Amino acid sequence: MNKKSLVLQTTLELITKQGIEATSLSEIIKESGVANGTVYHHFKNKEEIVTELYLMLTQDFGTVIMRNTEEEDDFKKRFSIMWYNLFYYFINNPLAFIFSEQIARSPEIPQSLKNKSRVYYKEIESYFRTGIKNKIFKNHNTLVMEELFFGNVVSIVKIHENEEVNLLDKHLTQAIEISWKGFLRD
Image (tube, rainbow, N blue to C red; front, top):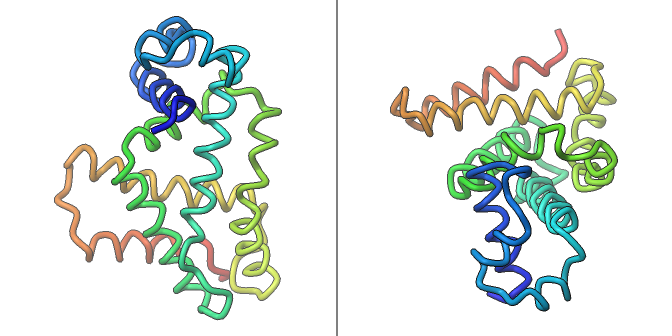
């Protein structure tokens, strides 16, 4: 892992444990083991590290959700693939999950940065827009639809993480079906 990646990974670990405000640049430098000059070569300050980390993870989310979806697939199949992609991404990347839940949605991330990151969700937005246009989905705001989709997956990840239910494939299929029906036109 290169030194810039090491700084980003260390920052992710620290802020998911203790939050943005409680994580200092000096702590990031100390915990990463990267020299001050090297850190300052890549980043001006902690805010720049957090910004890059936020954009990097947001890009990951957008890319992962749309992985292995094909335009020619029917809408329900694409929806299921998107759902599974995000679910397994979060299961296999718990720090990314914590970041998305605790940090990315916090007021500590400026709205301007959130707006800038929307570019990474264009394919997801397009999927919902096309579903509305083709009269498959209800005519709702696509941002609301994206957030509801995301929230449905997150809820099942939380159940998995808390081990409240021994999740089987049938439970995931049921969750996808419930989610899917919530978007369909009456």
